[in-house]
Image (tube, rainbow, N blue to C red; front, side, top):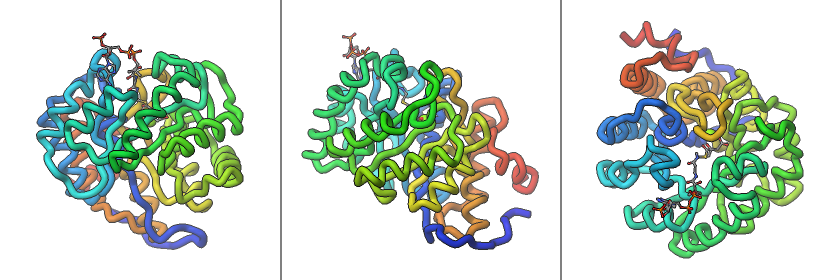
Length: 310
Ligand code: HMG
Ligand code: MG
C-alpha cells in the first residue's frame, strides 16, 4: 500500500501546517558536513514536495555549529522561495547577518531549564532571555515575524523532570517580548501524551492558546506521533518535523532525530487531514539524502515505502 485508508476522527483540524526542520535541526547534528549545493538541493526538493514552511539554517558562530557555517552562501544560492523560510538567530550579531541576506522570518531559541541554557547558549536562562529581547524587538520593528522555541519542555537530561510552571514562565516571557509563534520543544524525545495536554492547558490558562503554538517532538522513545495527535486534538495546527527523521541537537547528547515528516504525513493522510505534501516526492528526497549521508533514514514510512519507489 502506498497510502493509508482514510478514516477521520472527530476533533482534528482540517489542515495542518507542517514546519519542516530537516535542513536546520537535521543537518546541524550530522557528523558529515554537506556541501552548500547539496543543502540547497535538499531545500528545493522539500519545497517542491509541497512543504510550505522550511527552516533553512542558523546564524550562529561556526565554532558552535560547524555544519551550518555556510548560512549566507545557502541563502544566496536559494534566492527567493515560495512560503515561510525562517532561520535561527541567537543574538544581535546573528540578526544582522540574517537581515543582510534578506531573511524574512527568524526564530530565537530559549530553554525551559538552566542547564540547557548554559550548555546551548553559554548563558544563564535569565541572561539568554536578555540576549533575545533586543533581537526580537529589532526583528519585529523590521517587520519580521519571530518564532520562539522553548527547549526541554518535558524533561531535561541534567535536571530530570521539568515543572510545567517553569516552561510556561519562559513561554510567556518570549510571547511578551513579541514572538508571534511559540514552539514547544521535546529536545530529547522523552514526553508522553499526558504531559503534552497538561502543558497546553497551562499555557491556555496564561492566555497562550493553541493558535500561537507549535509542537516540536524528537522521537527518541517513539512517542512523537502519539504526542502530536493529542496536541492536534487540543487545537494545535502547526507541527515541526524533519524529512526522513534527521536530527538531534549537538548540545543535548541524548537527543535523536525529530519526528519524521513522512511518518506524520502518513498519519494525517489516514485521518483525512490536509498537509499539501506529496509523500512520494518527499520519500524520494529522504532516500536521496540518506544516500548522501551514507546511512538509512530512521523514518518507518520511508523504509516501508522505499521498495515501492525503486
Ligand atoms: P559565545 O561563544 O558565548 O558568544 O556564544 P560570544 O558572544 O562570546 O562571541 C564569541 C565569538 O563568536 C565572537 O567572535 C563573536 O563575534 C562571535 P571572536 O571575538 O571570538 O572572534 N559571534 C558570532 N559569529 C557569528 N554569528 C553570530 C555570532 N555571535 C557571536 N551570531 C552564542 C554564545 C549564543 C552565540 C552561542 O552559544 C550559540 O550560538 N549557541 C547556539 C548553539 C546552537 O545552535 N544549538 C542548536 C540549536 S537549538 C536546538 O537545536 C533546539 C531546537 O531544535 C528545539 C528543541 O529541540 O528543543 C531549536
Ligand atoms: Mg530540535
